[in-house]
Length: 211
Length: 211
Image (tube, rainbow over the protein chains, first blue to last red):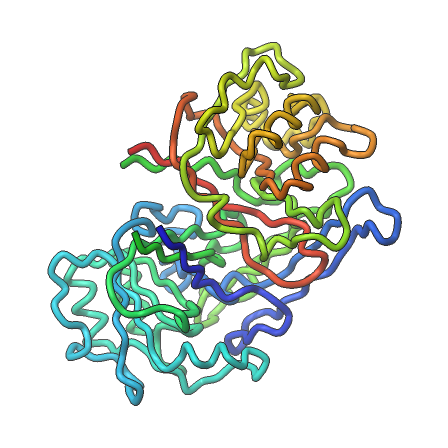
């Protein structure tokens, strides 16, 4: 069994989606200063680095992050690699979805993680609405991508998110798939569990497992 | 396959180890106020709710949370239930460790989670030093317990932590084992991945899996 960590770390250098809160991490107790232990304090937005979106991110009064079903985030997962030039993922890129439960898209975005301190980029490859509808109709449980949003930047009304979230599909964003070959894996995605705010999503440590 | 979530949620009501930072969670963007999405902002200490301790929590300059080996936190795990009156776990409670890779202790502490808003308690059941040494010598990869520290409150010099962390055993604290029968499971423990501060530990969403 080989475990691939596909999680982007939360850090003050991580690119942050436009309008979202910045990251702050500091040591509040230090052995070096005579404290009994080292203890750090972390502050960040719920959609920082690798994270899941809950339905309540875009549809008021719906399921929150702590209510997401873990079964959707655990099990067989197909990694589909997109050709280099693709900016919008369409039906033609999906292939047969027969028997597929979870889908992750590896795109040109993964190369963005080579230079995480360049700041947030708006020119990322995203999932198109037609493909989102096909995934929703196919009963897919989780859809993931390798940058901070599954949906093209500036998309009016966020129809891709809403199409997926209405079906309670877990959206997994901000994956680092640089080291991952396309193919079939098992995924384990375990979002931070918290209660408070609007419960709109959470950073999610995610691994792909090849058995 | 049945997945048991044994994670205590981070919330402003969660008990916090004495001296550690408080939790603050707020909605910073709200659909209800006309924002494009709900977005929450979270602040907490690295040792809040269910979390792992990294060696650098107590031993300066050693392995940080983002450097913990995921293989240690994934795989077969034995849940040992302690009799009701036990305050300190001793060698006599371990049983045979032959073939055991990870150990979690279910104690009277789990009942503390019935009333999480009662605040931090110092009278929790903990791992004794003799048992810690036996676990370290047995090559155990992960040791877990169902309250906020593996070590008795006020323990001078933290010898239990240091015994385990010197061997790079992952310490998993703050588990909620109320719904768990003793026996053998698979564990998946995925700590929040961050870089910053002293990297002393991290909240860790944790599940036990019965196949």
